[in-house]
Each structure stands twice: as structure tokens, then as C-alpha cells.
Amino acid sequence: MNHTEPRTDWTREEITALFDMPFMDLLYEAQTVHRTHHPRNEVQLSTLLSIKTGGCPEDCGYCSQSVEADSGVKATKLMDVRAVLQAAAQAKDGGSGRFCMGAAWRNPKDRDMPKLVEMIQGVRGMGMETCMTLGMLSEGQAKQLADAGLDYYNHNIDTAPENYANIISTRTFEDRVETLENVRSAGINVCCGGIVGLGEERSDRIGFVHALASMPHPESVPINQLVPVKGTVLGDMLEGTPMAEIDEIEFVRTVAVARITMPASMVRLSAGRESMSESCQALCFMAGANSIFTGDKLLTAPNAGDDSDAALLAKLGIRAMQAAPHGHLEEAAE
Ligand code: SAM
Ligand code: DTB
Ligand code: SF4
Image (cartoon, rainbow, N blue to C red; front, top):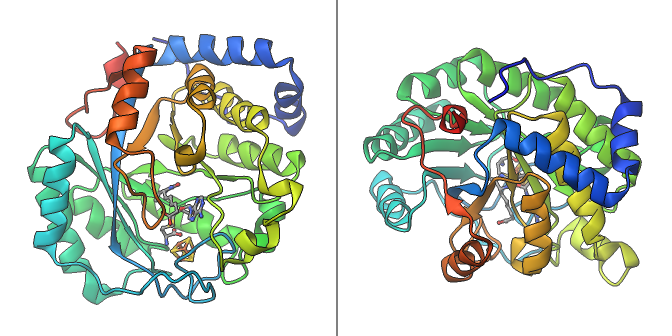
């Protein structure tokens, strides 16, 4: 285990140079970094549940849950605590170590907080790690969730600061950073990443990783591949264009550069696995990805599913990582 503090002073030039490396050299370096910080051949398993779907007032161009999207996703109310706990028990039975609850909100209302607190306490009581993603949080809300025992909060920067306004207009990159600061100050582990395949340039992927690696490194970094959804701005805009298919090698490069620049973080191969070949997923693990979402559904989009995942992990000789009691898996690498 390497206990030196991860660097947050990466320059754009250094990150550009990593992206430009010969692919095999990049993979070799990423896997070498990976092995000095994490147990080899282990992947952490998380399960997602949408606890409040659709009708979101934000206009994120990729999202099926925005009110602006004509995606056919039906808006629901916040789920009952009991139903959420049932789903969590099922995820635990399926071998998942972390339960991530997502709500399609700009931010939670104070009246929602008691239910959210109950969900966290219930899931934690089952011995699973808890994660929530609920939109923007005030300092006080972050503190309430922390006091309830929330292990992780997911809040993505999604893309480079300079590309942000092309994807979302209802909030700013700085709004995102403010919530991330509230989450970190409350003592909750940060889960923050973004999306590749939005039609962005490589320079935007460089800016994206640079922004993440320049902040106190998120404990968990989800890298999503865009799941194009009909009726969303991006799903419709990219359909039938060469940009609709993101280059697999470029995707793997992004994972590798995230691994090298944020060596101690968990890098999650998130949305998009359903349409990804086994070989591409294997290359992502080689590049240092060490976490995935299990189950046959993400929030609204399909996921690879437990059977195909179990088969893939067995084929690759990869084991499920055991969850640490207090939400931080780093000690598992000792
Ligand atoms: N509403 C909350 C928020 O945006 O902070 C939480 C849920 S939101 C769905 C969480 C993340 O899912 C987004 O930041 C985005 O990175 C990812 N996401 C949403 N739709 C996606 C899609 N179609 N393809 C890939 N990733 C997607
Ligand atoms: C993240 O970065 N990816 C997850 C999680 N955080 C909440 C969500 C992926 C959503 C994929 C599209 C959908 O299911 O609607
Ligand atoms: Fe709302 Fe989150 Fe979807 Fe944006 S990504 S529209 S904030 S649910």
C-alpha cells in the first residue's frame, strides 16, 4: 500500500500527455498504479434504486428524467421506506455491498428529510454501505444525512467546466462544487464523476479528469458512458451521427487516466455496460476500474444484469470486494 497523499496539482499538460500515451503503455501504467493502491482482481459491487423517478426540473441534456425530455419515463412520488428496505434486502442477497438511492430532484425539500434519514438508518442496519444522490444539498441537509450515517453522496461534475453549459443550463458548475463542499465538510465520502460520449472533444475529457483530480479526490469516481435515450436533447442530437458511438479505446483511455491521476479512489465503470462488449469491460478493469453497478436496472436504463455479470467476473477471475464496516474500502487493500 502506498500511503503518500494523492496529488491534486496535476497540470492540464500532464493529463494531455497521459491521454496521448501509446495505449499499451497507458494500460500498463494504470494497472501498475492500481496494484499499488488496491487489491488486484477485486471489484466493489453497488446496486442502484430510483427512490423518486422523473419529473425533474433540471434540464440535463442526457437525462430521461428531466421534465424537458420526452422519454416516456413516468414521474413518481418518493417511495415508501418499507419498499426501499425490501429492495435493499434483495440487493444484499444478491451480494451487493452498497445500496445507492437516487432521486430526480434539483434538491430535496426539508419535508423529505425524515424519510431519507429512515432509509439510511434502515439500509445501514442491514450491514450495507449507503449512498444517496438527491441533487443539490445545503450545509444543513448534508449534516442531517451524515448524522443518519450516510456513507457516500453521489454528485457528478459530469463534464469539463468549460463544457458544462452546453449540457445543462439550469445550474452551474460552481453550484455542483458548492454541494460537493457541503458533503465533504459534513464528513460524507464523495462520489463524483461524469459522462463520456456526450459528443464532447478529447479536450473536454482532459478538462473533466483535470477538474476531478484537482479537487480533494472523490473517494469514488463513476465514469458513465452515455446511454442515449430517445426524447432527450443528446439522445436525439447524436442519433445517426458518428458521435453516437463513442470510441471504446477512447473510453478505456479516460478510465486509465482517471486511475493514474486519482490512484487511491475507487473508479466505477457505471452506466453503459449493458451495451459494452465483455472485452471492453475487461480492458476497463485492466485500466483500473474496480467498481460496478449490479442488477438489471440502473435508475431508468437497463443494466448488464446479475447473471451476465457473475459470468463475466468468473471468466476474468475477479472477486467481489467485501464492504468495510464504515464505508471506506481503502483499508481492504492492506
Ligand atoms: N438528480 C441527481 C443529480 O443529477 O445529481 C441524481 C441522479 S442523476 C441521474 C446521476 C447521474 O447519472 C448524472 O449526474 C449522470 O452522470 C448520470 N446519468 C444520467 N443519465 C444518464 C445517461 N442517459 N447516460 C449515462 N449517464 C447518465
Ligand atoms: C452515476 O454516476 N451513475 C449512476 C449513479 N451515478 C446515480 C446513474 C446512471 C444513470 C443511468 C441512466 C438511467 O438509469 O436513467
Ligand atoms: Fe434531474 Fe439528475 Fe436527471 Fe439532471 S441528471 S435531469 S438533476 S435527475
